[in-house]
Image (cartoon, rainbow, N blue to C red; front, side, top):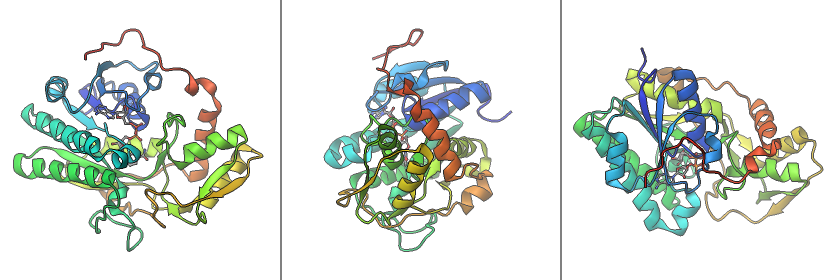
Length: 330
Ligand SMILES: NC(=O)c1ccc[n+]([C@@H]2O[C@H](COP(=O)([O-])OP(=O)(O)OC[C@H]3O[C@@H](n4cnc5c(N)ncnc54)[C@H](O)[C@@H]3O)[C@@H](O)[C@H]2O)c1
């Protein structure tokens, strides 16, 4: 039996984009009993409709609540996080949630002997990489508070592993896109914004010359890698890039979205972004391939087709509702 099947699992940030997709797979494919800890800062209960779970409303900053949530768990996936926009506008809040909240999670996992812990970090820790594709051990360059706090929590995860043998694994995501990525969330990523604009016939706003590249990862591939990080014994104490190893320019992305949606939208050039304004990023996934048997299954084309189909469904714009059968604790 693997460490997830029929187990009790806590997912922090489980009402968010990645978290809700992860929860769905854990419940439906692993028959896990999932508890979610989320303060609904950007999360949305609509993402969890039809998925059995226990919902704890609250913040990872709340040490007592974290302790309560973690105490009976077999595994913990820690995704709760303030995003890059909030982090830069309010670095203190970023510190409290992304570092302090993560510390609370690792400490409680260690105290209660949780068997597997996965922490979700970001490829932003590489800043503007000097070589591509960028590998796990390459230099870290912190260009914003978000990358600084996400990496600080990695350092704490690693220290809990070294000092207390906490069985923790870090995954560094690269630009994830797909279902449940709400365009109503200001940090929904460029793909969500482009698809939303294309479907509404509005201009797709490209910052600068549009030649900047990123490594875009479809949500199902990201979830598979995250789950693998909690299963393979050799992943304990390690960090893994989660992406595709392929670079796509923003211009190419905008043109593909317009073609796939059949939109009449035009591409409009706007000024450079003030955050995450780096020229190229593409990550080396060979370590994930070899340790986690991770192989991205979705081409950008296929992933975009799926995502456009999801965006086309007006359901995701419904007002968040309090769902029946969910336990709320403060
Ligand atoms: N989406 C990406 O492209 C991407 C890239 C790199 C890293 N990540 C990381 O993946 C994780 C999930 O990101 P996402 O894209 O799903 O973002 P998201 O904003 O959709 O999800 C984050 C979730 O955490 C919750 N949350 C925020 N602060 C909290 C707090 N103090 N206590 C409890 N819950 C809190 C939010 O309400 C939300 O449900 C994050 O750790 C993020 O840093 C995401």
